[in-house]
Amino acid sequence: MKLTSMIAIYALFWVMAAIFMLPFGVRTHDEAGLPKVPGQAQSAPAHFNPRKIARRASVLGLVFFALYYINYINGWIVPEDLDITRWFPGLIGQ
Image (cartoon, rainbow, N blue to C red; front, side, top):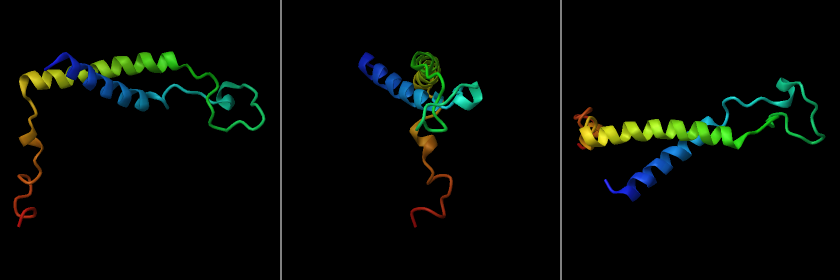
């Protein structure tokens, strides 16, 4: 696998992990006991820390990429394993 492919795949895993991590560990102003600004949404985070999200996404993205790369090297799951037409031979392709 080329280095550019590895970087692109890691970037995809990083973005997915960042989006997945956004709702975790966030507290609203009500939960934190802080006063709200007039016009503020009820669900707005009290202290949004993008560095914390980026660190968590980097670790989770690295774990996902490591699993993907190990599977790429060892061939545990191949495209033929994901072919659902083999699972239901009488239902599909008649």
